Length: 103
Figure 1 (cartoon, rainbow, N blue to C red):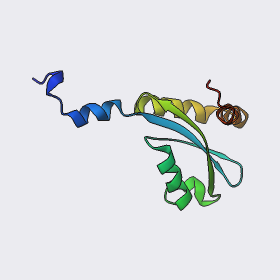
Figure 2 (spheres, rainbow, N blue to C red):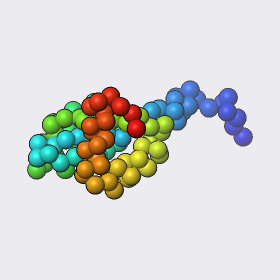
Figure 3 (cartoon, rainbow, N blue to C red):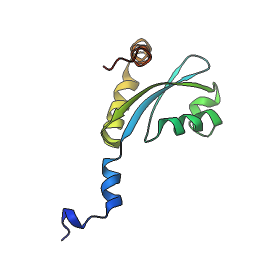
Figure 4 (cartoon, one colour):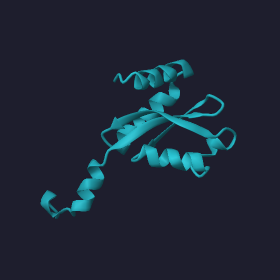
């Protein structure tokens, strides 16, 4: 039987690592939603063409929205919710991030 104090330090930090849900604007104006523990690094992958197939038809232009989540599970839930939104609602998220507002 293991106790809380017997867990390795790296396992504890992996549990509490912050995750983000993010939106990237493509050259054609569309918005791509994803999750990452490092949105800037992930955006660079999208720009290099090694991120998501979504950007094969229209390159990634800008990381326009990031939202901090407690963990990967919460980020996945938030991503699902954002993906269900209409584009106009996603644009409101982008506008709120640009204005420095938090929702």
